[in-house]
Each structure stands twice: as structure tokens, then as C-alpha cells.
Image (cartoon, rainbow, N blue to C red; front, side, top):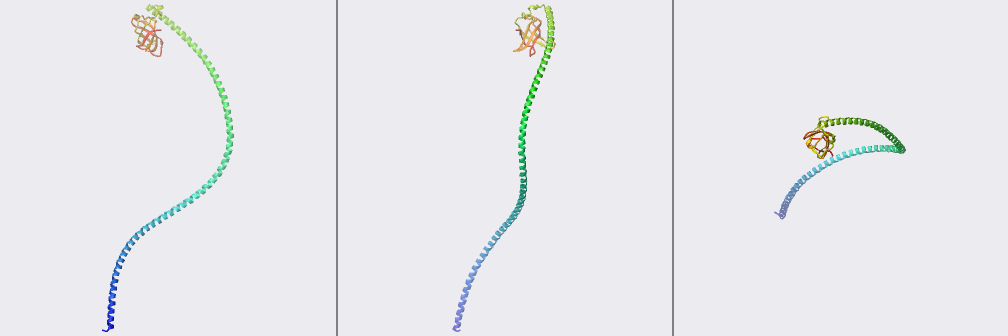
Length: 284
């Protein structure tokens, strides 16, 4: 082999060794890049998943915002519609207020006229009331005078009638009293003759006291029986006052006398009925 051939062989071997080294280096570098590529792909996948979730969340928010926008738009439309209606109502109200203000001005003018008229009428009414009061006072005075005169006339007539009636009643009572006195005198004379009583000694009544045994109101003349009699010095015609404690019940007059008891009639009654147990004392 020639020298040039050997040089070319050495050069080829050098290039081959260089190529093998470069290939080995490239293979190592390729493995590093592959690992980095896989790691980056994993990170990319994770990032894509995260981004997809964020995109989905953002899309949901976008949908909600679009819905809210549509709702707000509808609300704005309704508000604008209501505003237009209120503007129309306001225009109507303003027109009505202007009309009412004009009418109020007219009414105020008429009220001013009425106030003037009312003041004049009030003055006239005051004058009429004063005149009416004066007339009523005069009428009342006249009526009072007439009533007083009528009362005086009626009282005079009544007094005259009462006087005549009282005189007639007194005359009748006097006649009855006289008749009763005559009857009592006759009865007393009969009793005095029957019991041989001296009428002249009847008024000589001693101090005596006793109790009511019975009191009968069933007959025409009430009869009272007391527990003292002839043996106690009781005589027909004696009178006794009747008491129940401090209550005065009237006066009795002895009509018949027994040995231990006496019968009496009520000579003067009081507000209370005489009953058994009441005390009788000598008339003062």
C-alpha cells in the first residue's frame, strides 16, 4: 500500500472516530432532549387541562353575564317603558293641574266675594239675633207675668176652695167630735154607774207603772190589757203612756178594771204598734 493510501486510511479512521464520538454525543443529547420534551409535554397537558377548566369556568361566567345582560336589557326596556308611561302621566297631570289651578283661581275669586257676602250676612244675623233675644226676653217677661198672674188667681181660687173645704171638714169633724164626746160621756156615766165609780175622783191618778199583756187590733177599737188592776189602785179613766225602751208608742185610757188586770183603749197612737211586753207609765 502506498503512503497516500495509508494517509487516506488514517484520515478515514480519524473521521470514523470523530463521527462515532459525534454520534454518541448526539445520541446523549437526543436522550436529554427527549426527557425534557416528555416533561414539557406532561406540563403542557396539565396546563391544557387547567386552561380548559379555566376556559369552561370563564365560559360559564360569560354565559351568566350574557344572561344578566339580557335581563338587565329587559329591565331597562321595562324601565324605559314605565318612564315613558310616567312621562305621559306627568304630562297629563300637569295639564290637569294647570286646569285645576285655573279653576282654583276662579274659585278663590268667588270665595272672596262670598266672604264679603258672608260678613255682611253675619252682621245681619248678629243684628237679628240681638233683636230676637230682645223679643224673646220681652215675650218671656210677658209670659212670666201672665203665669204669675195665673198662679196667683189659681192659688186664690184654690185657697178659697180649700178654706171652704177645710171649714166644711172642720164642721163635720166638730159635729163628729161632739157626737163622740156625747157617746163617751154616756158610756162613762154607764160605766161609772155600773162600777159605782166617783167620776170626781178619776183625775186624781197616782204614779203607777206596768206591762202590756196583750194588744188586739182586730176590732174597730184596739183593746190593750195591762198587768195592773184594782188592787194596784187602777181606776177607769186613768191614762198611761206606752214605751218600748226609749221608743214612745202612744197613750192608752183605762176603760175596765179587774183585780189584777185592766182593759184600755188607745187614746193617742204613735208610729209604732203597741205590743205585749211594752211598758206603761202614768201620764205626765
